[in-house]
Amino acid sequence: MTAATAVSPASRISQFYALTKPRVVQLIVFCALIGMVLAVPGWPSWPELRLALLASLGIWLVAGAAAAFNCLVEKSIDAKMKRTAWRPTAKGELSDREALVFSGLLCALGSAVLFFWVNPLTMWLTFATFVGYAVVYTVILKPLTPQNIVIGGASGAMPPVLGWAAMTGEVGPEALILFLIIFLWTPPHFWALALYRVEDYRQSGLPMLPVTHGNEFTRLQVLLYTLVLFAACLMPFAYGMSSWLYLAAAVGLSGGFIAHAFKLWRSYSDALARKTFRFSLIHLSGLFAALLVDHYLF
Image (cartoon, rainbow, N blue to C red; front, side):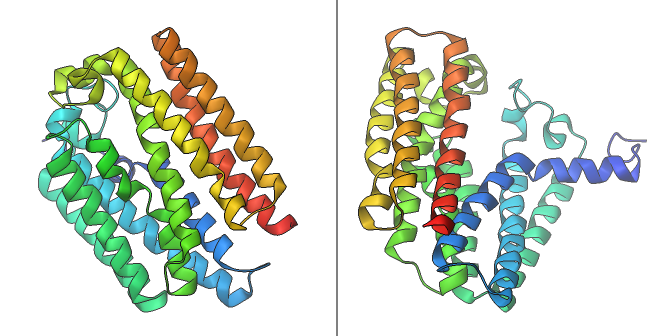
């Protein structure tokens, strides 16, 4: 009896669920929800709330499909890295066929939900995001260039755009501002992780920036990106999307991110890189939470 068949149904379900990278997908859906909320003036009506729930479901399914496909393509790389060696595809608990069929079913189901119950634009944008992450980033960019996370970050920055399109049927400048914030946030967030996981990436053979250009250069890039990100985080206020409440949160959170990056640049330690990575998650979550609160209070 193989490892793939000698487990209980509950264990099998948990293995498939793990392929969807739940924590990552939760952040994706949260960012999409921010786009939905900001696209609707005031409190949503029941039809708008129903539309948002359906859009969130569709985006969750397609994002989960992209994550599962990523696990399939990178199973041999994942097996070499402590951070990812537990994944069912890396451990051989799920076959390539099972992972591929699961990814295809999730993508088809999510696309159908978006096309028939949301709108075609959202479906096509979400599918393009799937292709961008699962194929362009995972298959082409990630093993090819140390700038993979910069270029591939465009896919990760799409959720607010998807949310905005779901509620309005178009892509407005406000959605593009949210896209820019996540796009600029992604490199310092991910490179902070790569700095203290550098040996994993070196062993895997992936050309991540700390491997190809060294620790010091990567730390400088983290700092520079946080400075540019600070400017981008002011744009919602400058464009009139938010009030002083958001501005105060953006200045505080972005200043904190810069402070972490500056300390990391001046004197490196794995512990400080971990703190910078963790703060980057607080930064983005706090920033979007402030947008949400600001939207309803002012």
